[in-house]
Image (tube, rainbow, N blue to C red; front, side):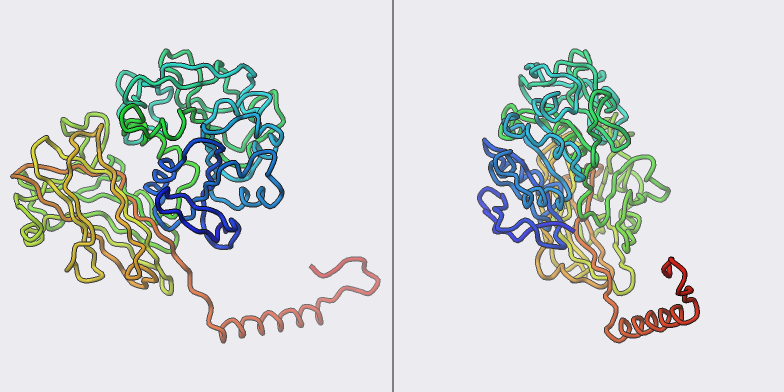
Length: 470
């Protein structure tokens, strides 16, 4: 499948390429030629885990250096992200390549989207700066807004006053407008295209894979702690990324009406090929007012966002929580002969109220739930400010597994009826299918050979026939 043989700079969390083109590795390529993409790369890690290669090398894909080998790197990648931290004039000579590249691509620069550059929009005007704290959710039901708070038709993308350049046109051609400027003049902030037609009637370019234009600030500005993206803004970005490339997902749980079933269980939204993910259950919770799992959209804190609202029995500390059965859990099972290597377990969580302490801790069946492998006290409160966690599972004890694994999310709160709210629980990893035994493979080859001899002998065409055997 995809890339690289790589050395990793841990301080910046950026892959420095020795060779991007090693087989069987999944990878993301980040394109930029200025600024610092470290925070963006770190965000990609929270979305896709630690088991995937992320390549970010300054200026590597500019017109002056993009030879056929580097084009191959982009073709081999699972996802290409082009940051706002690019100068459009340095990428204009290869517009056809970028626009028709058969790799999903997320573009953050409105300058490259215009006519005369990559020609995604039928407009050649320079992008103009607009107040961007809020964006108009042009289609509130779009998948990019899953788990996002929309108030009066708008989503708050940035924390403070932020100006962002966007294209001064309302014509998105054959694209789908997902978000527009706050003044609702339909100037595009987020647009998607698929492979069914050219970008617009004025170009012959047809996307070689799905495309997203998400006009943002530079990477460092977008992730600035004071005026950068809100949790909702980051969630829109996460959803945009996952729409293009789901990543090495083993199982995913999203807590909405569609996946909520009787007896306080949630169906998985997704499980990988050769994997069966169980219902997420809380069988050992005390039911009723003192404990259980509820669909959070019925709770006062979550009028617009379904979540898992976990209300454990009143305990304090890990020992009491384990003894009381204050947890929910899910199980992943493999098809016979398959091996599972885990990367990360990611999820969002917040407190159901301002009081505390409230905490989660994770255990697995690999040691019969004896040890906590990760834990944290939760400090954030409310759905608009959920904390994102990523539990690293790349250690040797979580690789090449060949049996069922149960993940148990234990918790404690500061009193009866006190809750923790969870969302977007995703298990990342990879599954390796069994390789035929040498004897089996040899026998299969012998059978194929005998069949070929039979067909050659008994179904041979006439010497005078111009046709070959099919």
